[in-house]
Image (cartoon, rainbow, N blue to C red; front, side, top):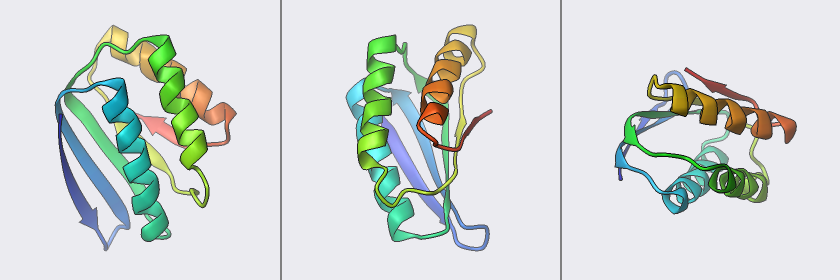
Length: 111
């Protein structure tokens, strides 16, 4: 998986553009990197563009990603937006992920 990072200081957005195959471990690492970035750049929001990735998420792995987000959340009060591929499978997984994240008081949007 490749990850391009852009910081838009004018709009206070940290944008990650991901491409290629994505594993659960890479997703966990990504969430840790996002937590670090928004802690370092206070007041910035995070936009993760995953439209050019391939991944077949499983519930167990999604829960591990949520657990990592909870673990990394110290000082994390940023908004997160995900752009996901428009497939039934990815929309279903995204809906589950969003529900779990919101149950932990994360503000999350997916497009």
